[in-house]
Image 1 (spheres, rainbow, N blue to C red):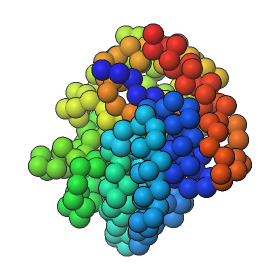
Image 2: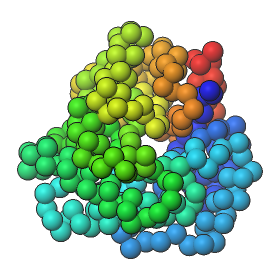
Image 3: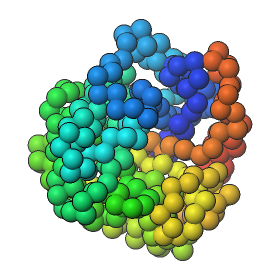
Image 4: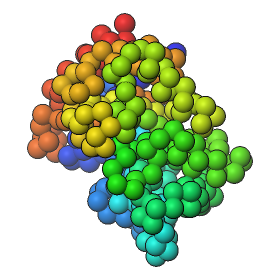
Length: 296
């Protein structure tokens, strides 16, 4: 199987322009937001004309719809014990799945939020309940995937055990539509030493596979500004951070990185690109070339 490299490209001008920029960088995977990520968007639908523009743009690329990942809003804390906030976050996740299904995306990834009362097992149950609600509300094949976190404060999913605990609360009949993905910056920031050796990279992935019973559904490929176990979620260009370039080569040598979206969430050089300019970002081109070399 192939490596499917892509990025969360700038969506100035609309998500169809994000797809065009990715296509012009020869990407084979893509990540987008379906709505502004700092809001719950629990009542926001995606307009049909927006769907049509996106699907048409995507068809002009090498990116298959199943390799599109939609990143859910950052504010959706489905781990919270606050019933009012939890219900709104739960509904926001379901609406995210509705928009992503309409766009034809393969998956929604989300940060599960924080166990603000310290009861992490109850938080795992609440997160799973929100996943189940989304799946039962929205028919289709689009998956809802938990993303591991950098571990700041009381955030959930910072360890393989916590990701496994969340998924174990999802009934077996729904497991085909859920799962998890791994962010390399978050792994390193939460204490998994990807920079130690190729063997340690394999051990980290083994641990997640053992705890969840499955392989990741995607990877976010990001270097880390923070040190090992710093709990800092600060992404850097590959090779410019504390992980370094070589560990990404070790990661790409692992069978579990093949056949799934491998998404860069690294800095962009031009966040102010014109709405009608579909030129790839120079940093994305630099990172894509590096990944192709590391994968050889």
